[in-house]
Length: 446
Image 1 (tube, helix red, strand yellow):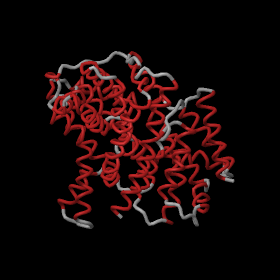
Image 2 (cartoon, rainbow, N blue to C red):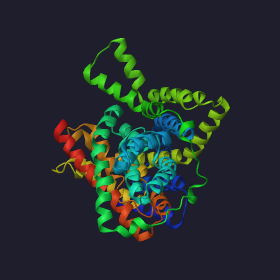
Image 3 (cartoon, one colour):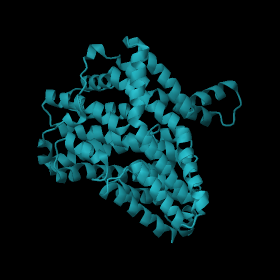
Image 4 (cartoon, rainbow, N blue to C red):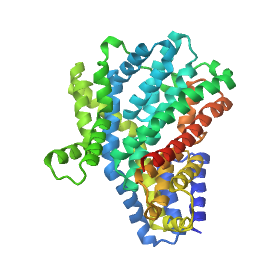
């Protein structure tokens, strides 16, 4: 059975990565070859399939991902993230600090990948918690929850962007729906979950945080950072461009006017990221007195940090292509042909199972897209909703096979048991509540 072969392949992948500690990219390529052989594919075509999967995955994504990493690093190094967080907390006051943290983290999280956002915001949140005499975890949970929501739901993050392409979904539409779903999801798994956890397990809030694992922490003086409006607009520029193009497309469907075409051109993901990056050159670079050489070093360091992630995404694309070309997607589609289950629940369930097994949300989402994409013609549903459902499933139950689990454990000073009770449960609440809000969005908007 094709499904059994894929399951065995995933088991081998787990052994290579977790037990033997092999590199994730190398492991993905090896398993892709093995699965292709067992699926009966022509051995002379397997390498071409893997090359096709890697090339198709990175051909478009490398631009968006690369520009996004550069933009995020420019904002972070200039102190833009610090300015956003500090200003919002000053405006909302001590009583509503959690709200300010959620808004700041959600805003910064759109421009920064999860790990980068965590490293940037941790020292800021730690300093604020110490000043307000609050437990670090009390502010850390809503911060991490907001970052994880943007990581799972919103382009230009790697998984939502990649599976949008796999499902032929409009990225601007995914972005708008993702924000609509992501806001209530963040409220549930952030402040509301925090409130319940504080009552049920107050001991976890007494942990001593340790930021030394993240290296030397950069400190900022507020008066030396970019202005609040400049920081927010620079961070959100890609979102604004893509959202504007989507709105114009909805208001003027099929229009051939030069103005509409110009807006759509600017709103394409690669162009939106490039224009936003050029804007950041000024707002976070030259306007701050930084030289072209300094900006160039920041861009180089940003790419160096994501190079392995790009390869892993490419490896995930290879595995996905083997699943597609090997007929697994068609086989699974046939199994669900007579099913009464919502395709959203199907996509979420497959992604959730793969996430628990594989650890990587990105790889789980990409593998799911290879299985689910052949089913889409059977259903009359907006592909953007399938993207969000896959993303929601791919972030469930973060545990020991995911680097994020260890980052949270070490930075918040938690034991293994406490990390399971907080972060693993939080990501599960995030995933389930995200699916619920996606189902509600389907009812409301379609």
